Image 1 (cartoon, rainbow, N blue to C red):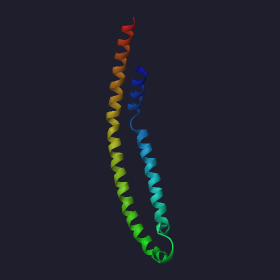
Image 2: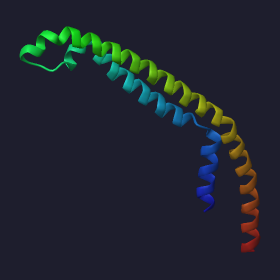
Image 3: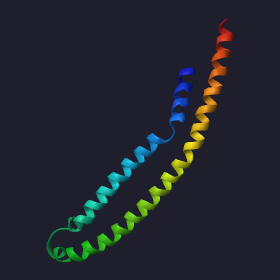
Image 4: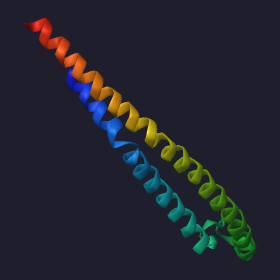
Length: 114
């Protein structure tokens, strides 16, 4: 029990850095996929026959949509980072509070075992 509380305390004191790192990795991965599609939009066009003639038009339309999607993705993740950064203070406070509480719990447990 005390070990679990110690782990929670340490994670709280560390703050949301790990979460931010994971979100950043996800953003970069998604942006890379969207950028790859933007770099070669004809790869998204259906293949074969008469549709091949439409590939240029289709590619242009796809780039327009992907550009708008990328802007929305960036705005969304900026908001997520803002929320995560706002969580940093409360996480640190939680870690400090838990540290104080852990001292009390450990002292109580020692008193019970004596």
